[in-house]
Amino acid sequence: MTENNEFNSIMTDLAVEARDMAVERTGGEISGVSVEEEDKEIAKITRIEVLNQAASKKISKPPGNYITIESESLRQTNPQIHQELSGVLAAEINNLIDYPALTQNPTQMPTILVIGLGNWNATPDALGPQVVHHLLVTRHIYNSAEPESRRGIRSVCALAPGVLGLTGIETAEIIKGVVDRVKPNLIIAIDALAARESERLASTLQISDTGIYPGSGVGKRRIGITKKDMGVPVIAMGMPTVINSVNIVNDTIEAISQNHNINLNLSQKKQTQKQVIENILQPFLGDMIVAPKGIDKLIRDTSRIVAGGINIALHPDVETENVSFYLQ
Image (cartoon, rainbow, N blue to C red; front, side, top):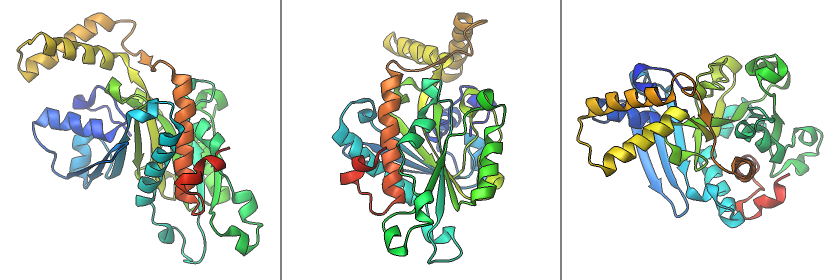
């Protein structure tokens, strides 16, 4: 979720960027925000926990856990590394899920509903529907299978509800109707995100246990898909596929000022950049949203990585080494 606070006028869905902006604004670490970093061979993992409402207000993110996986390999065509990234993603997903706590009966396996948010007709917004396309869904056979046949899998169902402009129905309303009927124990929602920094486009995955507000990163606040709204825990996942044109110009001016050793204090620098950006982009381009080159291929590859990670996390018999066999 992204709030349009004064210090967060450059919108982002990424907690790691929101925290960086808050540190930049205050000049020091944010009380109530815990940060842990881990470097792996193929990825950097940043785990942020927002511990209280005071910290939540400062970085404009609800209290909870946010995990960021950064890897340039997400942009590369390398099936072997993509498979390994699915394993990394699966491990982080399972760090946020307490399976025994999902059901009141410890012998009962939970039902997980995976939601692919976004517009399947608009490629930069099609990550969620594409992930659903590749998922291993089992609820339709799980409930009728013999107990011995259920070993190694969990009951998983999926839905790509479209967007308000296609259906005329709020996405959260569709999901709530399905939740009331199917009664899942957990929701996993996947959506395309917005970034502040261009270098994070298509190279970053975020997972959180706070739910999601579709469209918040580009200023379109919708009804939330959260535990409060849905009545069950919600894990939100996504990759930044778009960036506001303001951010691109901001990055460019930042690079120019550094290369030419322009000496301004922070306040002067921000004000100067803001004025230049407004002069360049207004009145027609200020709200332009930009996607990276080759977005079709990036969505295709990343959707398989994310689907593979979910398959590994949810089904005990699916392992990193054989995950490609289970991608639809």
